[in-house]
Length: 149
Image (tube, rainbow, N blue to C red):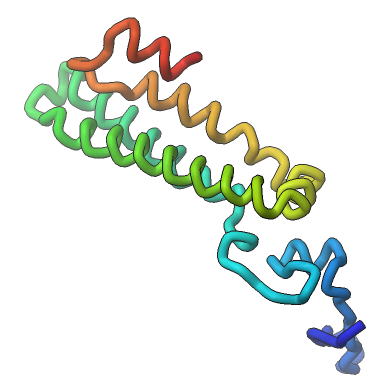
């Protein structure tokens, strides 16, 4: 085992902490069994928060464009945020599927983590929010069914 980092205790004594290349801590830090770090291994499942935030903005601008006190607001910000959220969701899902194919052990570690496991439900919530924040000109039954299904 190689000493990779140190930790300072309350008495100011430096205590070395060892991280084996294949251990759970190494997987959490994005290292494979050889100790190498790849960008794909470090891609977090919390990245689904980006489409969630953009979809929330889309819902807000959709509501603002139809509210009686704000009739002068255009629907263009709603379109911008809706398309940005949809494209960000597709990009995040494609990258994470590639990560699941090549680095199953890291995805399994994220699934067993107490906090990160909740982010696996993020794409479903993003699809629901995209359905709610869809612009009125494309709000038809087939589009909403595709997003909600």
